[in-house]
Each structure stands twice: as structure tokens, then as C-alpha cells.
Image 1 (cartoon, rainbow, N blue to C red):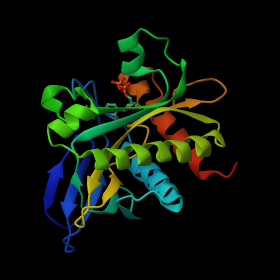
Image 2: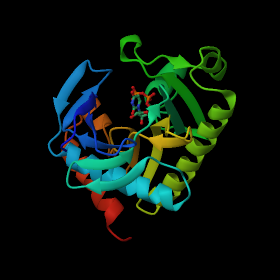
Image 3: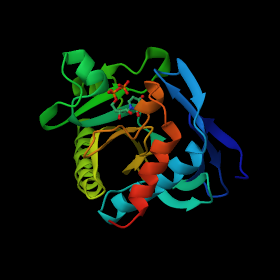
Length: 236
Ligand code: UDP
């Protein structure tokens, strides 16, 4: 990490490099929930999420999903393609949980008849409000074609990760993705895929192995992140 800091978010910092189209993402231990209202640190989270994200992005690349990932560099850093991030949080769900269970008065864990996708505007000051496709195109945030690409890729990510995680006895309940455009205007998957951004449940016990342990004060937060990395990297 030698370059100038370009951006600092809640869990990561981004540094410029000598290459115009590449940046270094640095993973911190800082944890936030409820849009920053709850703050803390999770020991070694940056190291674990860097490894977990690198693992998932490599797996997705092998399955033909275009991503920003280039290489992991040491414990906390990743070299990635510089993207112009589309300010949307793209959420895919296989089961009802979190805000969806609350909004529609459903039981946490209820199976959905099919995977579903939703978009939120990425804007902390506005509390990341949900936004529909018509509003996204009307506000000029993305075109219909771009949204078709994003939705296709998001469901492809779901297929690849859900199938892989089941072999590790983990249910992928839901997750959040972010996409951006590279210098050629191609849409790539960006950001991270980790216990910070996914709900992972043990397939046998339904024990939570993700940030809900921090959000809901369930204890054993670090252990859950360690357990996820262990399961991903240990041969079944
Ligand atoms: N999520 C995220 N960042 C956000 C909001 C949600 O990574 O700012 C992830 C979250 O970890 C979960 C999924 O997106 O895996 C769906 O989250 P939900 O809408 O249920 O919101 P939450 O209950 O986490 O507030």
C-alpha cells in the first residue's frame, strides 16, 4: 500500500497505484451495522474478509463471472481493476431474512419460491432506500440493458455460490453485490463477498456464520468468520 488514498469506506480503504486502471483495496477490522449506528471492531476481520472475498472472486472468475479481482496481495490487500461504481446495492435472496422478513411480516428463514432480487440506492445519508428499475433508469443511475446484465450476473453469482456452499454445509440465505464499469465501460462485479455482506447459515443447525452475530449481539463473531474461511478452504 504505497499509493495515495482514493477513498475510505466503513470497512475498506482504496489506494491508487502506478497503473491508472488498478487500485489496491485494504480491508480493515472496523465493523458497522444499521448504517453506521452500531460500531465496533472484529479482530482480524480484515484479514479474514480479504481471504474469503479473494476465494469467492476467484471461484466466480473460474465460472465466467466478470469481476474486478486481480490478485490478493498479503494479509489485508487486494489488487483490483478500478471501477466507476454504480451506486446500487444489489441484493439477492433465497430465503426471507433481515429487512425482507421484517418488511413483509414473514418468518426469518422462510424459503422463497424462487430467488429474488432487489435494488437499494447506495447512499448512507438517505439510509440506502429501496429503489425499483423504473426509478433507477428515470434517475439515470443505470440503463435497462445495464440492469439486465447486472440481474443476470447477480443470479449467476447466486447459482455458483449456493451450489458451492452447499458442499461446505452452508446455506446462502441472501447477499449484497455491487457492480461498476471499467475504463472500457464493461460491467464487472466489484466490492466484496464475505460474512459482512452475506447471510451464511450452517446447513444442519441453521447457526449464523455471518455479521448477524455482530448486529444481533449473538457472540462468537470472530469464530464465525474463522469458521467460514476454514470451511471454504478445507477439502470436503
Ligand atoms: N447487506 C449489506 N450491506 C447493506 C445492507 C445489506 O451487505 O448495507 C447484506 C446483508 O448482510 C444481507 C443482505 O444484504 O446479507 C440483505 O440484507 P437486508 O436487506 O436483510 O438488511 P439487514 O437486515 O442486513 O439490515
